[in-house]
Amino acid sequence: MNDAVDALMATTRLLVGIATHALEDLGMSLPQFRLLLVLDDLGPSAGTVAAHRLGTAPSSVTRLGDQLEASGHLTRRRDPANRSVVVLEPTAAGRAVVATVLARRRDALAELVGRLPAAQRDALTAALSALRDAAGADHGTGPVELMTP
Image 1: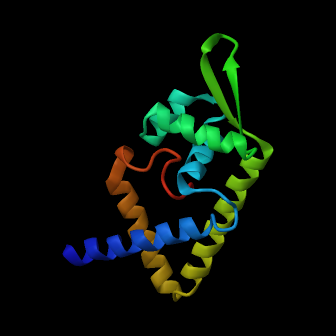
Image 2 (image 1 turned 60 degrees about the vertical axis):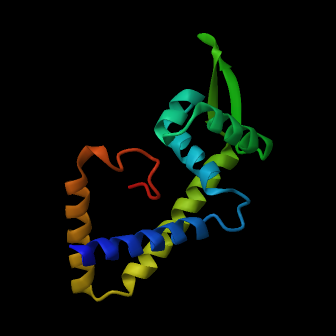
């Protein structure tokens, strides 16, 4: 069991490296990207909803929103139904960043998996599917994880 845990820990480091590498040259941090990814998934949303999905404080989303608005990746507006609610929405530039980063991640993973013989790819697919199923609904069900389906 320890070997499997150690292998997963090493794989986690690999996946984080791929995730951060996909952001290179885009002038964006991983937390900023995660907010855009959440909003891309949810659509226009209150900052508190985004904070909940990210598992962070609303004040953190406010700071990230400030940065993303200044860079032209996000807009903020008042909710007409409740003026105390601020709605966040990615701009076209923000949605383009999400699409670019996810494509880069997919390409990097496809290249990496393509190095494996077919039998190992099949075994990897089965093992990762079993791991995802074992995690159940409590893990990785939102857009916060490093990859989206």
